[in-house]
Length: 292
Image (tube, rainbow, N blue to C red; front, side, top):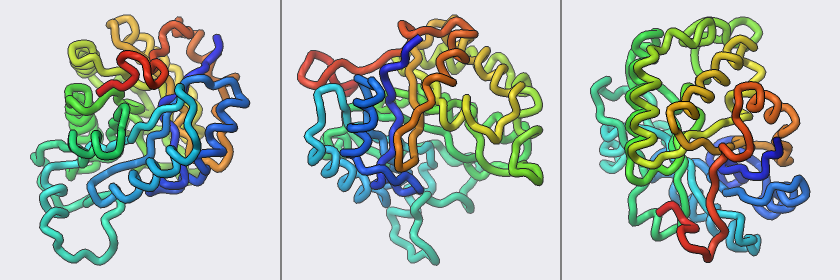
C-alpha cells in the first residue's frame, strides 16, 4: 500500500505549535511522493481569522501546484462562546482557543466559519474536529455523549467536508508518565456504544462527509496504549464496511514533514483498508476540484 495523499497539514501560521513554512511543506511532500495534499491551519473562532489570512497569503506565495489545495481545520465550539466573543467583553488573555469554560452544557454546537469566509479566503475544503468537551463534567459517560454529539454535528454540517480524528482525546486522565490508559475510552474502546458508530456512519454517508484516518494524532500517538490502536483500527474498518468514505491526514505540526507512511500502511492493510479506500480532491482547475 502506498499513501500519496494527505489532507490534514498545519503550517507556521496555525495558532498552535505548528512551525513549518508552506514552501518547505510543498518541497518535503513532493520529495516523499505525496501528490495530493492540502493545507489546513486551525480556526477555532473568528479570533483566528487573521491566521487564516496569513496562511492563504503564504499558500499563494508558494506558487502552489495544482494538486496542493487550500483548506482549514475548524473546531467544534459552541454558539454560546461565539456570541460571547462577538460581544467583545474584555478578557484576561486572548481567546486563541475560544472559551473553554463557563458555558452551559446544553449550548448548541457551532463552528466559527461562515460561507462568506469560505469564499473570502478561497477555502476549497473544511476539516472539522472535536477537540474538547463542551462544558460537561469531565466524566466518562458525559464526555462520550458530548463527543458523539459533536461528531454528529460535524458530519452533518454543510461546510464540513472531512471529520477529523473522531474520538481523539488529549485532556485529563494522563498517568504519571503522561500516557493514557483508562478513561475516557483507552482501557476499552467498547465503552462507546456501537449505536453511536452506526449513527455517525449513517450521517457521514447521508451528507457525503469523509472521515479522516489520522496518523499523528491517533494511530501513531505514543500516549495511547497499543490495544486501543488495535480497537481503533477495527473501528475504521467498521466505518468502511458501513460505506463511509475515508481519507488520510498526518496532522503534521512539525518543522519537517515526515508522515511515517511506512508505519501507517501496514496498520491499515491489517484491517483491509487499502489505497483505493483513501479519497481526495482532484487537481485545481478541474470539475469539482473544490468540495464547496
